[in-house]
Amino acid sequence: FYGCSDLSSITIPDSVTDIGDAAFYGCSGLSSITIPDSVTSIGDYAFKGCSALTSVTIPDSVTSIGDEAFKLCFALTSIIVDENNSNYSSDTNGVLFNKNRTTLIQYPAGSNKTTYTIPDSVTSIDWNAFYNCYALTSVSIPDSVTSIGGYAFYGCDKLTDVYYSGTQE
Image (cartoon, rainbow, N blue to C red; front, side):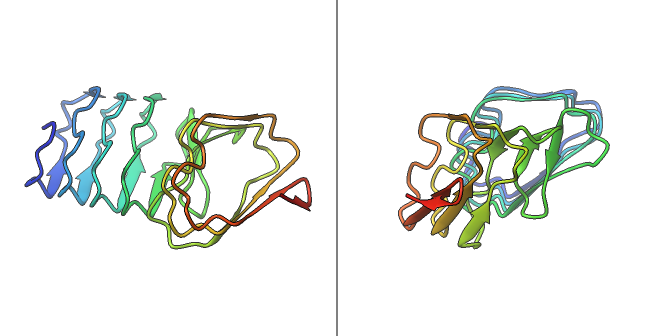
């Protein structure tokens, strides 16, 4: 489906176990996708550039999510992970984490929230985690964070205040 701009919605069949690398890359019209419990893997760049995609629900069966799977999804307001998933979790803001919430994987770029406080459990912020989060103006980073990946805040043009360990930078 790579680059299929006319595709607006898809329900992946129950027989599918893997969403391959770049499977829906550039499907700019894709606004809705249903991922069944049969899927265990979401590949690198799987939904990259799906600029109309508004929300994604990750079933409990998914054990791996590739790099930049949701990068350039400008309308994405939430990534919801089934609470029984053993590898991933999400918070009430629709932010994607590893299960124990030590790694913040992806903040939804289409969120209209202007401020976000990263949970104290987080020690690492992934590459591109906040990439092009246009509405974000303020982020609080706890002192538990010891690693911030490259381009983590790239394109956050309105981001003016970063608070680290209670200080403003």
